[in-house]
Length: 107
Image (cartoon, rainbow, N blue to C red; front, side, top):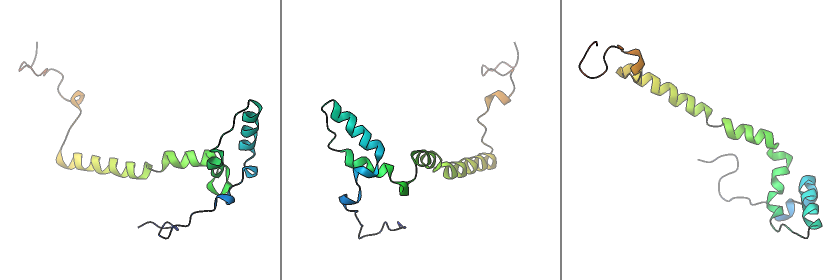
């Protein structure tokens, strides 16, 4: 299983690989915090988000939202096929409207 370099031994990138100077947005954020006397000690953990090899934030959101669509469509199609093959019907509005479930066919 795995694939694309995910097999052991895992190659953990050096923390020196990610530099704050490579992410101008985070550099501005750090400067804003410094103006009010605050510091974010974990800011380096977010630098990867601005690395172009991981795509843009828009492309990451796009793939996050659609990655399950093929599996979902396959499951939906399989469910429809099974329901049709077994004659399962979950649509009460398609049945006779005079039968209200009280044993009376009409009022």
